[in-house]
Length: 358
Image 1 (spheres, one colour):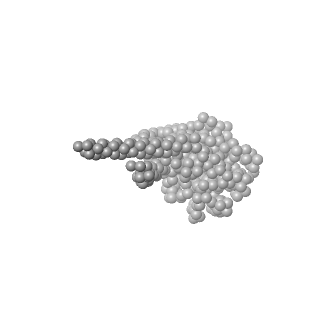
Image 2: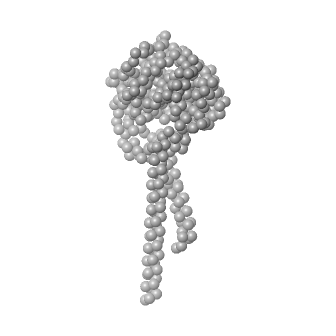
Image 3: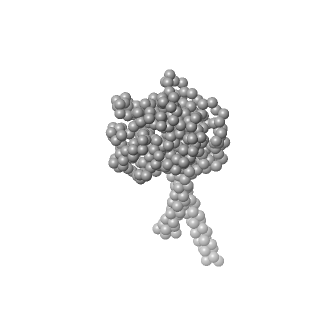
């Protein structure tokens, strides 16, 4: 069989290959986004842990975390588990800011009442787009559309709507956004002029020196705030705490906290080593079995769905190895099939010649 005659067969195999690889990629993204966590936690995972108290000379009533996620978006903890985790880390106030959703509002209101003497739970939402991520704190509803790639006017409209509800607006992890979205991310000057109240100066374990220096020049207009960006208690996913936002309030209530946030009366405490409190947990065997798919899915999400370049050293290697490995398998199988066909043809030719001789 000559090469031109093999082309349709190779094309057919290539189509099958793309279907299989596409299915693997889709499955990996689904597992990374919605699959079970690396560890299983329980409602009493942090029950017997004495709350961590950061060392500081700052006088405060509130230690606040403005940025956390739950199972209502891409977090791994329930709201109750998140409450217990925050208490263990010394927080007595925090905001739940699931991505582009207020589906958690009923449960937040219910548990806020149950824990009202221990911790203030603030309703929030992370307005997540491909230009900028904004935390909207203290809002009660959201009826505006959330565009994937918003215009300047749509960002301004979002900020004004949050303010009309008595909320405050935080520009999250600007270093991440600038690395991920490049020059389409609004500048700090633009965000300040549009009415953003705070820049998130610490996101997880990352200190944003650029935003801090900007604040020093514009501290009468912009405020600073910190967020764990907690998705799970594991240190690689926001679970290692390096900063707390400190405030003083007239009373221990959500409204008193919001008054101080609107006034931008915030301080922050830094622990350079960071604190991790895993609590009681059980390793998840399902995660262990499918870990390669989690790694690939995480790489694809950051590289393609979020256009994330900040993870590029790791992500590009994972994706590149997968592509090269899978193409290598395809080429190897095509060679094996070609050799097999060649041997069969030679065998048939040999049998035919022997028959003619006989």
